[in-house]
Image 1 (cartoon, helix red, strand yellow):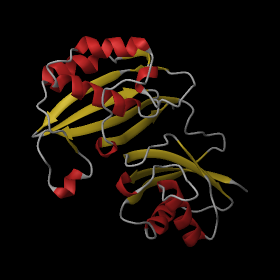
Image 2 (cartoon, one colour):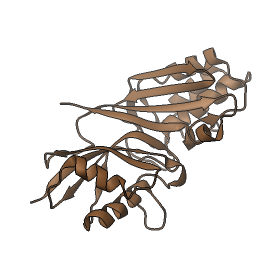
Image 3 (cartoon, helix red, strand yellow):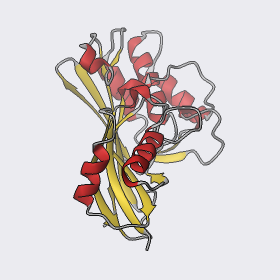
Length: 246
């Protein structure tokens, strides 16, 4: 009888070509699938809540898979982790109803983008973007606040995407701890490259006296992704967690 399991996964995305399995590239889902097959002699396919891009990290990625045997979730986690590289960790596992889909009933996803205006130690540099321009933090906050609420984000997503680009951002929070700034995004869903394009554009505006916050508003309303404001590097972005309706 088929069983569906839900797993919470953390990974350092630096050396991976994103989450989604690809034929010729090393991806997080591909490594997970290969290691599962080595341990349990079974092949699986994943459905994940978010298809993180190349270089993007996760602490709370949610994925499900089907298999035709029953195993204690604690034993599943221990055995699977024993064959995974140190860049990927299964944090937890549980059996869920066959009807459970990680894309459905999402209340909120949380992403965090971290950057610093000073270079970080190598052990942190894989997860924190070094931004080498002086930043007006108040201007940055004003720019980020423009994106809270329901908007058409076509100007701030992957240019090849032609689907519905209306999304809602519930909250954008800018915090500082030492010399590291964290921008937290919360909302039910985000477009590909959307967070990185917003952060990159806001940082650029906040670090150039020649650019005003109104420039961000103009680009947002223009609904055209072909603009010259920057996209923030992938290394600073982490999928922090996902909340579901009970």
